[in-house]
Length: 246
Ligand SMILES: Cc1cc2nc3c(=O)[nH]c(=O)nc-3n(C[C@H](O)[C@H](O)[C@H](O)COP(=O)(O)OP(=O)(O)OC[C@H]3O[C@@H](n4cnc5c(N)ncnc54)[C@H](O)[C@@H]3O)c2cc1C
Image (cartoon, rainbow, N blue to C red; front, top):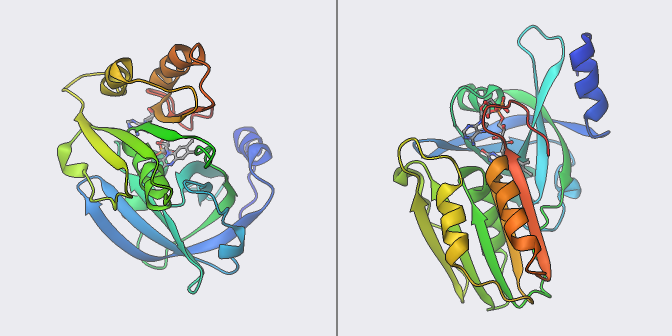
């Protein structure tokens, strides 16, 4: 592991979770035009994976000059306890540092992870679930849906910039997905917010939203007044801001 030397890097290091683990890319799969699945292997990984759907890790890569590092959050899409491997799905959104690293990685590329941390997914106490998210939240929504066995009603709404990034997700009984497509030049989250305006949110239900920070802010503001039993809203990235942290 490198020792950050610049003041900026030192600040980054201070904000880093205390425990990191070395990982190596063991497999790569292009799921859709802009979504890449990376399998990450390492010693003692599985013991660190929270048993909550949508848990996330911080992926750390070295800066090209070796001084300092970049860390970004990614959802644990799945884990394999027999092989000590986790998978993450990385959305290539543009010129993002870590997204580009992922898409340029090869089997054998090394990095580090910190965490995992829980996703805030609604617990079994919620009578129904309503999930909203964009491409960056798609892995968490898929993980939540795949771990669901209660039969309660679940409505997932996912906004994409490109229809070709849709995925086949195994749906539990009682669940349905609505795919929405962002218009050209439309602000991220616009379609999600329009869908939320039409939705009903029973007070005993769980509502989960993740996506661009401005849309998350609006969504939180809109739903806080409804006094919903379990409300989790998180900005996963902010338009125009690198290394965004809420
Ligand atoms: C808890 C949590 C879980 C997450 N899980 C996932 C996941 O499973 N898969 C995943 O792909 N992402 C996930 N994200 C989002 C991811 O961490 C951010 O998109 C991050 O900014 C990517 O880092 P980067 O180095 O590629 O870009 P940065 O260097 O952070 O940003 C560079 C530029 O790209 C822009 N940008 C960042 N993200 C996007 C985007 N999605 N669309 C358009 N522009 C963008 C920024 O505004 C900035 O202008 C998660 C975030 C959180 C907080």
